[in-house]
Image (cartoon, rainbow, N blue to C red; front, top):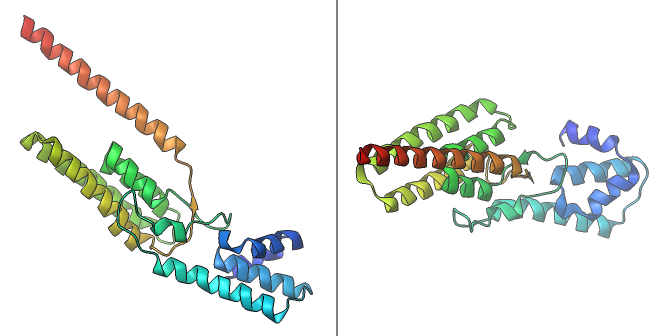
Length: 216
């Protein structure tokens, strides 16, 4: 058992430890094991049946994370098995939210959100590769769309970029079985809307300028 979880459990009251055991589906398996061990150290007696059920639930929680399957994209069900409310779990933007932002606002924006997640892992330097991918993929997309002028190709490339972030980079740098808390999306949502508004305003301004030049 991780010493960090043992230390965290030692700082909590009996009521807090019991609450984690009672609502164990909302907490990390390590948190439950540490809470159980701490209560036992303090003299709390569990029956053999209680211990059996608790340990079975902990094992089932871990197994559900490994067995979780789902298709990439908005309808992916992978998140459900690994999302917890445990304050000791890392706070990440969810796989689904990253997919949605990458599709609506661009692969670069989604890559920034994923990089912020990776920055909280044991290997934060990996975020650089994700940012490079988002940057160069966005340039590639712009070149292809400019050359073809196809909205269908643009949509297809947005989906592909979002899937790569969600399925490849998340799987490789965070892991499908990593438990986490969902980080609120309000800050990136406001930023994305403001940036999108500025881009649209700039495009309209350029269109008006071209229209005035054509009238001369």
